[in-house]
Amino acid sequence: MPEFDLDSFKKTWQEQPVQQKYGNHDILQMLNRKSRNYVKYIFWISAAEFLFFTLIGLFYIIQGNESNSFISILEKLGIRKTSDMETDFDHIYLTLKILSLSVTAYFVYKFYQNYKDIKIEENLKKFILKIIEFRKTVNAFILINIALLIAFTSIFTVFVFYIVNTQNIKITNSMITGFIAGIIISTVFTVLIVWLYYRVVYGIIIKKLGRNLKQLQEIDSQEISD
Image (cartoon, rainbow, N blue to C red; front, side, top):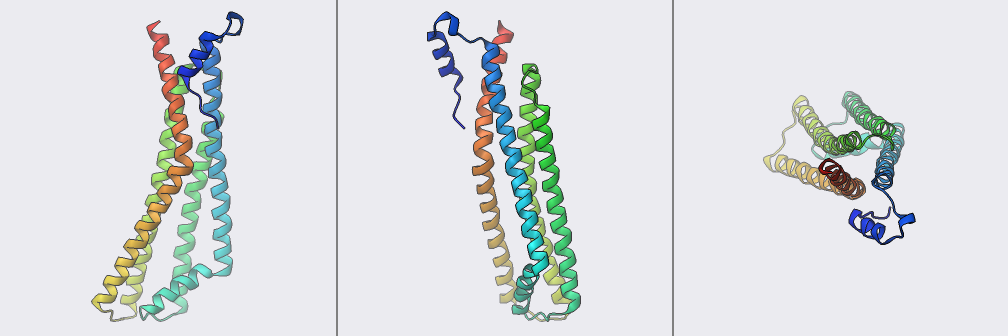
């Protein structure tokens, strides 16, 4: 995705022979096309994420690996493995997985809708507003995914203490402190990884889109002053 700089383009434009010069309409067409392509890239990436996590989720549900890993952690706390506990965990995990995929599917649809709604030939003000709305949608997608990650971790933590209380298990303060510290550290680390991923993958595209938006706003202000 090559960079497009309005000032450089104008300088080149001014140096061209008269018959090769481009008007504001041509510049807008180029900026609009690039911006629309950036929206399309976001849609493709989010759709690929949705497909990937759906397949991963189905794999874990079929294999039961997620359940076995979580229960092995509980057994280290002295919790007894029971069929009721496994069933409760499976229900919680399935509910949260469906919720997560539903949220992702919703944003995939929103990104596709944004892409379809952006028309190259539409007026400049309307186009600028749609770009701003799209950036807000991407930011909401990132923040909601991070919020869901924290919420899911909190739910599973509550589930652990519920099982401990149900089975009347005595846990030392050091074990509780170690468990909570481990949860906090792993959650913070995971959130940082997720945030870094979105900042790199989505952030690069959003940054380029932001440059286009700034240039479009400059052209809009020039047209108003003229």
